[in-house]
Image (cartoon, rainbow, N blue to C red; front, side, top):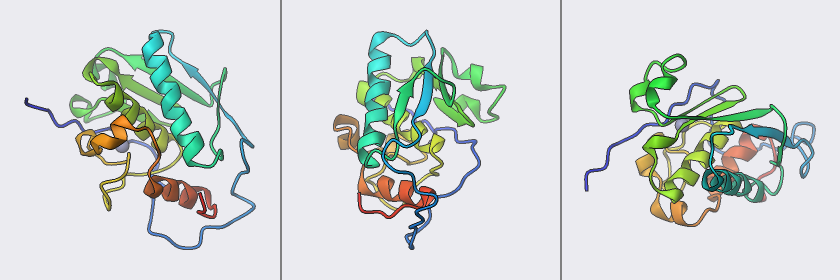
Length: 180
Ligand SMILES: [Zn+2]
């Protein structure tokens, strides 16, 4: 079956996810659930979508050793549901190719273009990665951060677990030791 290639929009100030070096900085690296990310979901998300978004959040919580924590009820992060890519037009010049966008404290998801639950969860994990400051990663297959959603390995769709490479990228951005 024909599968279209869908890039994922990434218009955030890229901090990059560079190659490894010492990233330990106790002043910058947060402890477990030190600053929960208070989030709000668009009321248009249905129960299944909310559950999958919650699962994607757990991927980062577990994968970061709880340095990332999400808590409902706030606007640190607002996730909105769109029906059509066209609705990204105002924010994103490459909108026809995109199924999601993360910018600042907002993530937009074009729900109608995603038809597999694991893919949906993988997409949310990807966008949450951008929200956390992580750029695209192409030096390994085992990452949720490929620039094209089709490159995400199927086992990462099926088994929602943060690969070590993505955990390392998080540590680099947050200047943590990477002993996850
Ligand atoms: Zn992206």
